[in-house]
Image (cartoon, rainbow, N blue to C red; front, side, top):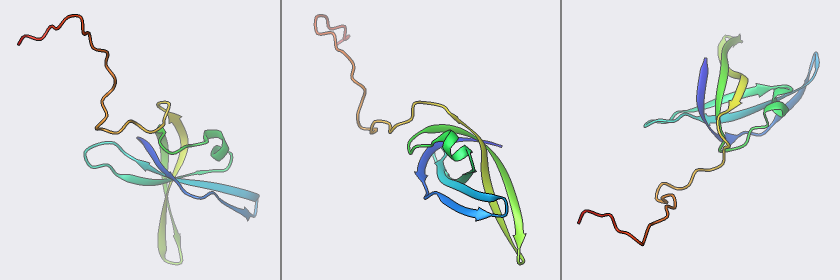
Length: 113
């Protein structure tokens, strides 16, 4: 499954020690575009944390695997990102009330009225 959106928040890095050695996990909130934006908590594991080096405000496209596990009669679901592509330079867009600068031609006025 592929999801596109803007990185809205980076959650604290989680690390630990398992049977196979140390591990780390970075969770982040992805906000989808549209009239009714959705927020999705996704995670990246291991070396991918350093490889993708996410920043708040970046526009990204994420390939996601969904996995559910049962533990003590309860089910837990995780959305794990396995591939991330940055779709723009990122950063924060200008506020909607600010219009981009446009040079005006003061020598001639082509208005019909």
